[in-house]
Amino acid sequence: YNLFYAGCVCEMAGHMEEALDCYRKAAELSLKDIAPGSQDARIFARVGYLYYKLKELDAAKEYLSKAVSLDPANTAAQDVLTAIDAS
Image (cartoon, rainbow, N blue to C red; front, side, top):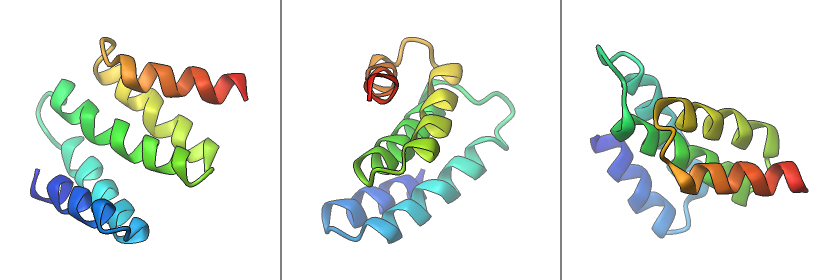
């Protein structure tokens, strides 16, 4: 999860491309877990939300959908998906 936290720091500093790089790498690594779950969903949701903020809706949808598939109770990811579908 170090890459996830590095992504958070980059995002808070306004370095969105660096944040996306960290988040995407963290997401890739999380899929190598024996049983990815809700903690991993959080990573995918963050990538998706950042893509949403950057108006890259196809990429946002891909990552947010993965987040919801890993954790169906992730209402934040579901809400952003709903907003994308409504736009």
